[in-house]
Length: 361
Image 1 (cartoon, rainbow, N blue to C red):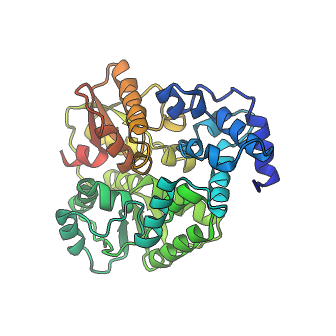
Image 2 (image 1 turned 45 degrees about the vertical axis):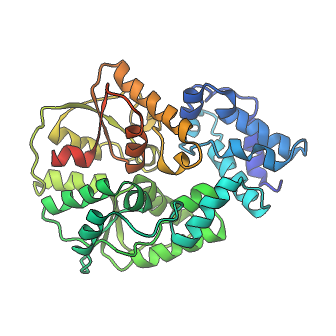
Image 3 (image 1 turned 180 degrees about the vertical axis):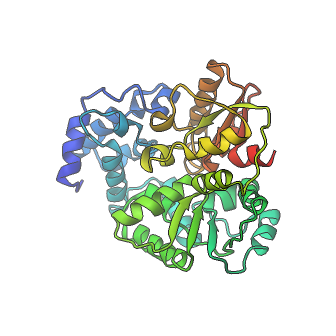
């Protein structure tokens, strides 16, 4: 397998190291050694040494959430996410991706989303139609919200309406490139999709990005890939926090006591931890998970649930158990994808709310 010397160095350093063994949310949920950074590095090293074929490890490579918990926990600076994404890219170049990944990839290239959907639900479509007029501020929903959790996407817009914000929503919203980046990394197709999205965003003064996965890509990866965004891009959590602090979004305590599930894209990747807490504290009494902020534990997502549904339910169930084990009854999310994963678990112990649910009551 063709791999950069930098990645080879990281692979060879990680393959016999147990330092992050305890922190992988997938490994902890499944209880399988294969779902650790060490095991993934060992598999890649075997491919690099031509002991096995690249196709033999690709199922395992796509069991990684790329959440970066291992990277954050490593005191020696190794990066399993980097070599995992490079392996995915090389598998795409060598036509050795699993069939289920090729299906998601084809959908993404053809329709802009991995689910192959071309229409959203009726009520969200009505909301979008009411906000097609060009304004200075654009609410960027993202494909997960628009096509898979449209009820929450509509609530995101309702919160801005409640605050009296004038904003636009695009009916033909472009994909941010987040799904392609997850599936095949920094491929030409990924960069082309990102560039097309940036060209649309640059027509607006301010872009409020609802999904943390899109926010990470637009605010961080676009710069790394040399894609310019001239619009002021802010996360939905940061934007709503400013609305609360300015008094534009009226707040009233709900009487609930809640814990917040930090999305890793906000906390670890973008360094944003307090904005959502500002919002939540205005509507409820806020407690903390034992692992929070940069130490957060990923709670699942929609994209991986397309090919590893039972694994994602185990990941989400374990995070719910984390809340239950400290006596908490309500968990609030700021990630539409984690919201979908958490609410897919059949249980009655912990109420799952989005930040919008909490605000709208």
